[in-house]
Image (cartoon, rainbow, N blue to C red; front, side, top):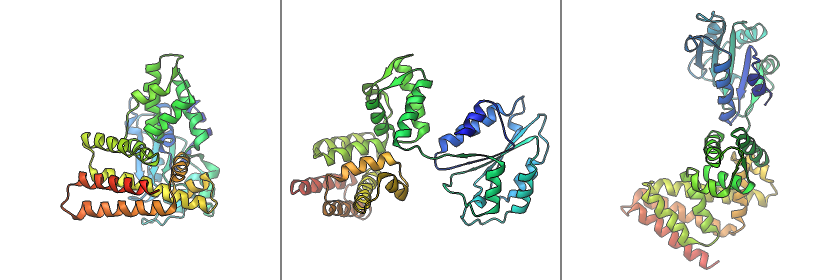
Length: 339
């Protein structure tokens, strides 16, 4: 993350390209630029944003070439610059004009291209030019080992240490969004106190639960054969006013992931390869691979069929939705007993 290090040290370039699926790093770079590159009372007047799915790049270039308002520097953010990728664009962009600007950028403007896309089209002349002229931040989602290291470093920034079991529990409860994890780590570190350790008990007690994390626990109880506990988690979700249809959709998503991971693993794919194919975090693949070992392919096929039938009943029959999921659990329990 050389670009982030540069920004934190107060060094700025005329052009940046920030792209990738992990928006936490991109937002971090954006905020550093706004807070550090601009000064004075007219910051808001010197920050402009353009969406390349709505306006041509000419508009952003024209703004970049316009002097700042009562200040020394301005920021121009260019969202969704798909002309750096192989994706088709609906708006016609004057790429030649952009090439000219990149070769001679305005000294009073920081032009920032920002996108969620994962890949650049390296064959394009404009892509080669932006990589040569700009500070490039490729915001990848950290792999499992990198994620654990990132959590430890964030805890250290907050003045605490965190044990490995607490990291695993934090990921199971809070998920893999770095912005959410950063907020939870700050809260846990404050509770633990300066220089103290964040424990698994702290995480279990204090971390805000999400529907996805509760569904993870629910599926985990199913995998280990504790269907009564799975039902209790389900009833807790109902008491928290979660919609049965939404619960069913998330349960189906988790079992679909388990099924897909089992299929890819059978074909010899490694966990990183599976994560790339399914576009999910490698840690989720690791968990799903462990859960997949509890089922045969035929059992997972039956479970997916049961979920599809439950979804159809929920959307087409007059039966109480809460009862439909209960019936799914009872059918599942019968299937598991014949395992």
